[in-house]
Amino acid sequence: MTKQYQAHIYVTLRPSVLDPAGTAVKSGLAQMGYENVEQIRIGKYIELMLQATDEAKAKEQLELICDRLLANPVIENYRFDLIDISRKEATGNRQQRSDPATTPVASGRNPRRRQTQGNADQEREC
Image 1 (cartoon, rainbow, N blue to C red):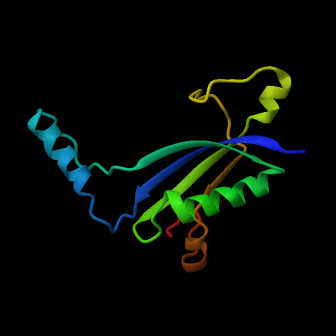
Image 2 (cartoon, rainbow, N blue to C red):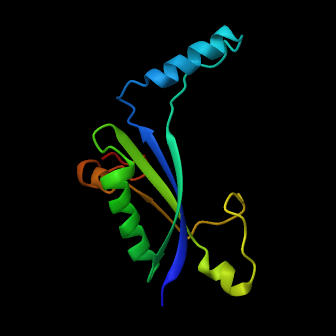
């Protein structure tokens, strides 16, 4: 039996990569009088729905999707939250995608950093 999952994916530049878009936004904010903004980093937020037999397969698919298409592993990191929405549909209590009260069943990050660095609390790098 397949389950339906919703993924919230966050793609950000690695800390060592310059962010010209963030610099431009910071400059614009300073011109508008917001001198107290110290740093801005621009990233991407992606939502997608997928079907998988279980949570582990869904996470595996998401990691491949992020590594191969959604994130550039040379300059970007990613993380995701995975929500099993088939449970909500089964109870007839389906919530909106943007509902912040939705609890993720799993979270994932780029697995390659685990091979190169031992600190699992930080965002993993490609």
